[in-house]
Length: 363
Image (cartoon, rainbow, N blue to C red):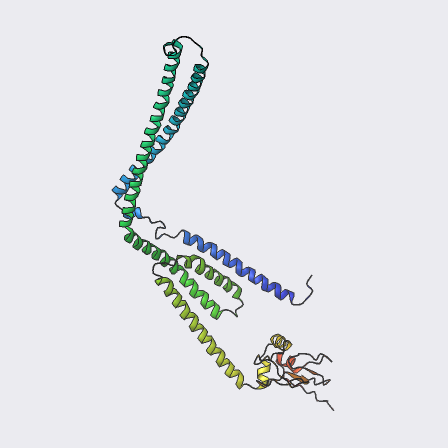
């Protein structure tokens, strides 16, 4: 339930902001789709694109071959390492069993001529040879992997040399690409910014300002999100140039606004006290009076101790007067007397009537 008369105005203001934000959102979505589909400078640039294609292709083939070799040798090494571990474990177990058997044997014959001893010894030799063979295979695979790693390091060194040879050319090409992307976005963004500036300067008081405000929000988003991140950083020339232009425009606008304000102040100072008071907005005047501030010059109201200032000591504006009906001292901007409710001069002025209306009795 609407409990105050000002609620509809506030709801209307909120609704107009919703309209502005919604319009800005739709425009941002449309602009993003347009920029995403723009043909122009490619977004990717690598150093390989500036190198000799034959050398790049040959180096890629060699590197791929070495990597495949590393993968194959690593897998084979893992398998052979398991075989070597199993062979070593078998030999160790058989050796421990043989040593225990020899220690507990009580034969009277020469142990070196005992057929069982010879058989077990040959079995141990066979297991040991198998373990040593598996270990040698693992070592050979280690050597192959070391050679492959060294070959890859050599390829990386040659790639670094080729990259260093085209680094200057790459930086120039990257700068041209960044400048191209920025130029495309600037060609789209600059007209939007100019239109937004014109709307802010000319249409702020228009009844269609909520729609214009939505366009201004869209232009601001386009500038800060779609343009600023793409400012080329090489040397900072473009970035500083844009900053200088924007600063000059802002300074010119500030100077013009200050000149207009000073000219308006001079015109206001030349008006009579009643003209200056009648030109002030009723609600603004009441807000300033509530904080003991003169509505005309916005200075603090000064008065003698124990008394009320009837006029502003700085600009001479009447601040308080007496009701023509009951004589109560009241705020000069009240439209009705707070004591008797009589219409005041401020109300008559707001309605376009003569400040003083004298009724003459008919005979």
